[in-house]
Length: 260
Image 1 (cartoon, helix red, strand yellow):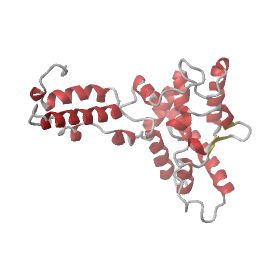
Image 2 (tube, one colour):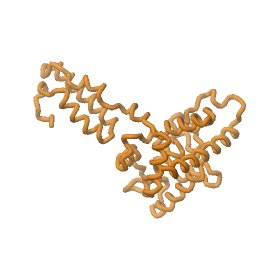
Image 3 (cartoon, one colour):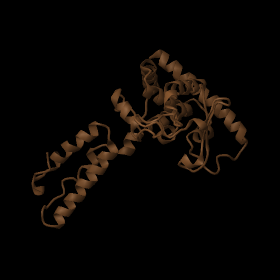
Image 4 (tube, rainbow, N blue to C red):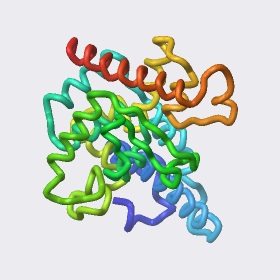
């Protein structure tokens, strides 16, 4: 559309229309990089006498940004409707997405999860520090619902004999792409309401609204501050509290989906 045009003839609206195509597909990080690259190209064109204005420089305020998209979150009513749709669907990615919602982990932590991290006996998922953003081991209490979803996935993927909980589409021991959850949300029509990262904001908001301990919530999100473990609770009590919280959250989501 723009490739063969003289650079000096290209106007802001033309670039905006091209960027809207990327934006519509929900690929906001690609949108950001494309806009920046366009701006750099026009800066170079100005410096070399090929153009006099940079039509891409004015577009930052009129397109969505990744950080704004990440913070989009579902209301309780929307969460119930979403989880109802996931349960009814029952396909592989709907199972994966339900686990993401119920555990509030980051997408990378789920995508790269291995079966040896899952302890069904103690209902825990222990993520090693090497895979954590904060470089600390992360212990995730597993609700009954999350355990059932994991066991269902294990049955589905058993013939592939993969060490990964979520093996790649084509290769058994290669994880799925970084955008797999957001791509799935787009396929099922929820990408305009939330993102994979947005489920963490939904989790935090609901639990804070229902007066759960901020320390428990922050620990579950792996937002670990050096001071967070100080006070009246020891580590075991934090874990017991988080077990209770995660089971409450799963049960509450069930009640919301039953009302959908």
